[in-house]
Amino acid sequence: MTQDELKALVGQAALAHVVPGSIVGVGTGSTVNCFIDALATMKDQIRGAVSSSVKSTERLQAHGIPVLDSNTVESIPVYIDGADEIDHQGCMIKGGGAALTREKIVADLAERFVCIADESKLVDVLGAFPLPVEVIPMAAAQVMRRFAKVYGGTATVREGVTTDNGNVIVDVRGLKITDPLAMEAEVTLWPGVVTVGIFGRHKAKVCLLGTSQGVRTLD
Ligand code: 5RP
Image (cartoon, rainbow, N blue to C red; front, top):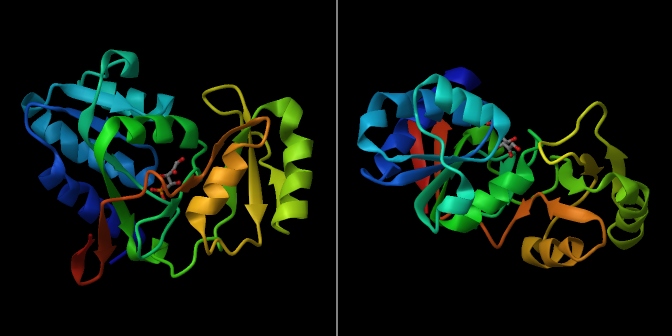
């Protein structure tokens, strides 16, 4: 099976986690695009979606799925999103699509994070994928220096990318994230950091992993 076929498989499988009559939290990325297309087949059974990016909002609306303002929603049962890496505890690196801040906000509204990914995303230790950090532009150089000093990684500003919130993405290479919760807590405190792409406090409760043998569920 190709990677695209595996993404379609888990996008479809995620429908089983959608609670009929509820509002669904929707992430961002190519795997989530497959989920959005599948969700369109049951759009009459949900009240709508809270979206984590302009791109996902546009795709949801193109299918006629109502998108609600997150400020009007107190909680949602399920948030469905992809990941750049996920470990065996459900901690993730996210932000390859630069949507990490809104993704963490919607994940925070949700009772359950259901991660959908192809099997290449499952790792023993997070960090082979460059860690995205959304940063207020005037703090970019300071945050990059601090990464080198504290964790020894090599940080660069992602070229040509401005987030939906008007900020830059710093990508940090060469990390071995053995304690995701500790690194998430520390980096979140640095002035100018809006969101670090470690999802440890908001880790996945369930991961639907696309494999050539079918969907493997990790929970
Ligand atoms: C976007 C994300 C995505 O979930 C992550 O990049 C995975 O994307 P894809 O499904 O395209 O591999 O965090 O900010």
